[in-house]
Image 1: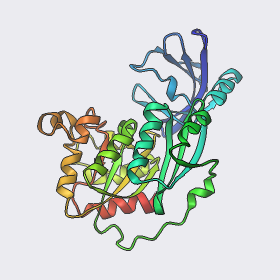
Image 2: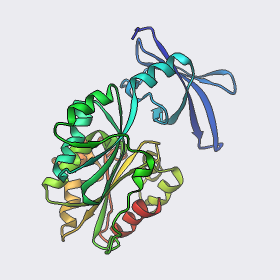
Image 3: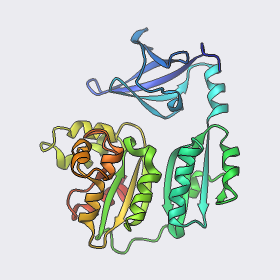
Image 4: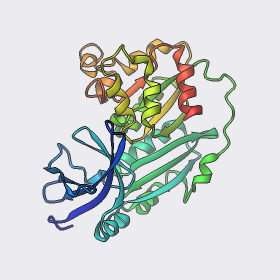
Length: 311
């Protein structure tokens, strides 16, 4: 790729003040990883060339949300043929089904995909009998998957209808369950977090990734309204257009131990008082703290029902 290459995308931003969807032309300059935004409707520059702290090149794919100066911009279409051809050929999406795999080995599989093969996990859901559906995105994806077939049973070309596999209806209705969310700030550590929960002998029930909208996010965190100053910021982070992974933990009189493993709400405090907790290891601040867990044990039932049944 030529260092002078410029990629162009059309993106949308939801203006919270006017409640309007605004359309922009996003330019990505490969020579210095900078971004520029042009207001399409008003035909004027909206954001002059700006270089984010980290490169956004690997986040440039359709339907993804990138955050620029606290604005969540959704990439909705390619703005020119060159950009379309480059990304369609380079970054393909592929949905697979993983079967005949132990729980531990599946979490290791996720780690291989993310860390060693540089594949992005777009979607993940667990079904009965340790069957998992995953949507992966990345460069040379089929070539990379072929390397994994030696160790794993992979069924190719799983269409959307296959995700509607019948699940055994839960008898206990989440009475003894707790909910953990791996938020977008912890998404890069899916494998590490799930493996830690497994190694600490916490029983994982359902797994389901989803994208949550602003209305549902505000409703989910409503209990914190008027209590935490970060209520709005927490809701915005959860509804930033990126997936979250809902994890059901089936409790065995170990809720206190589970909360201790997750760690304090503020990772900076966690680093001082519980340095090995998951938020301390993978979170950076009160908003980007990687994980959510229900505060009270009795809230687990409602939060599980919200994520697994209602949205």
